[in-house]
Image (cartoon, rainbow over all chains, first blue to last red; front, side):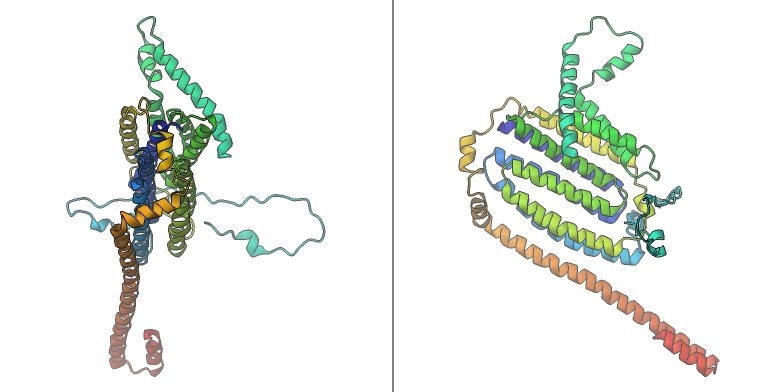
Length: 147
Length: 305
């Protein structure tokens, strides 16, 4: 295998992961998604570290990634406990709910009006009737849990 | 499905690459005039530049901006950008290893883009699991077998499940308004694109396509040894023993800290509830002094409890 090409390709993939994570961290407002994006930046760095470790023919890159895994686990535990606490205080996951932590000379963030969400009507397939007609479950037909 | 897409797109990006090389090689016969003067420099841009511009545009279009307009366009632009950027990957040697690496990196980057752009945080988490799987595959290509398995077990198995647990605890029903908008989507996408441009140009300037890497035989003795896990373990618990101890302590501290944060919250909630109950009690005393109604008093006492 062409080692130089493998190194360059892995570095490019790692850089792409890091930058996509950066975009998400800068622009998303959900605290949990922001943490997911931070984890993605860690992944990008891990790919680069393993590639450099192979290039230099030593284990340091892989050992470093093992420590990154450990620290990411700690970070996730603490951050999610904090997110849960913040959620219980404000009742939503919006990071803008905490804009009172901004510097005192900056204006408050004003949310612009959002267009209403279009009502999604469930589209059920029409099957040819066969056998006895079962009893209709109204609850099942009208309600669909939303993820 | 993604594999088939990549199989289609690999020849396609070879074509892009060839076209770009041809455009670089061709010398303009006559100085461009009129519209050509504007269009020619844009068309003759490097495929890397095109890929970066399209990737930034695609991210901007796909990020939540209040409405779903332009998402399909963004997805198409993103696939084209993926092809263009993928055409910059160097051939690894064997045809099969090229295809495997290309598919893995395409899956990883596409899933990462989906993680960032999907509205529902649950979908974001599931797409992130896909990114992790792709990363594990890239680790496997690089010969880091233990890390590939550890990424799936620790990240996808433990950390991501914790994320999903918290989402189930804290996620409101339906699409929250803060999931349908972003801060400055255009500026964010532009910042990411500029950083990616700087990084890829820097990586290109390393001149790795002219350097001879370490020989296969030396790698076989060290990083690619058959008893991979044993050597990695020896390295980890030999040279890095103190760091392992520190990491263990860090895990313990994080465990205690997370428990403390959550239980402090519980204690505070209990204190607030007690405070409210006391307030109700004082109100009750006031009511008792002013009114003499016995039935109402017991009702209030019940509500205070």
